[in-house]
Length: 305
Image 1 (spheres, one colour):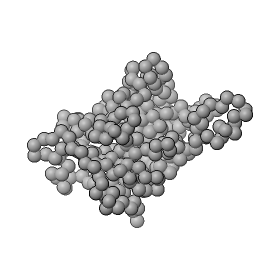
Image 2 (cartoon, one colour):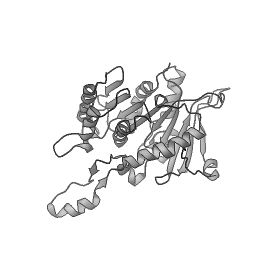
Image 3 (cartoon, rainbow, N blue to C red):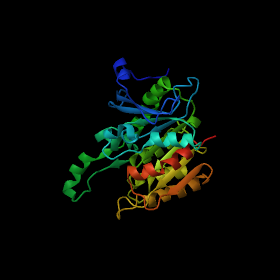
């Protein structure tokens, strides 16, 4: 039996709809917000983009992209973000109108605010936000240690979010019609989903991933090694990074991402067929950079056919 979260009529009626770019005779794209979605994780917003023309053809069903950090996905709700917007709705509509991408539904799943790090961190990883400066600080560091709970978040996606989306919107079923997309910690979480639940989605965009957090004491990148040895064949993987974390500083984890590129090749993935690697020279670790390459990402996930 499929589990659906208990969403009250008040929740459904409180969706805020914002229409943009109207075309005569065609319903414009819109982004609906469910502000307090309930599931097995604490309440958070869901944002659902519906493409232009969604209302005119009730028999048409669409592939779906699940995006992490939903507060940052859509310009319609940029006030919900403190870092800016990917403008995912505008990008998807423009690509579809140009015949470069299939029309799709995009679901931005809100992060857990202060819980974001633990929600996206794989369960085999722990992270301390502060470096230990002395032996006397060891106990304090242990108390501050963040333990990965990405398995709980994955269960929330599969058993709460996806059933709700499938029952309230016209979604094509099957992993071939499902994509997952995320950056930074969301990129790390996207890799975790590909490893742990490849039956959920067939298409993945791993953007500027925080693979450095999976480095063991021996220097090995555990998530990268899992991509090398455990990732199932037959998925479609987009992998990228910029070359700086901020102007003149850092590398946007490009070396760790390059290691993941080599791992995928050793696993048997063939660049240009079932995976694509892109190094965005000069790009930083921020929403502006990710928004700029989102057209390439969307065309890879759901190319027009």
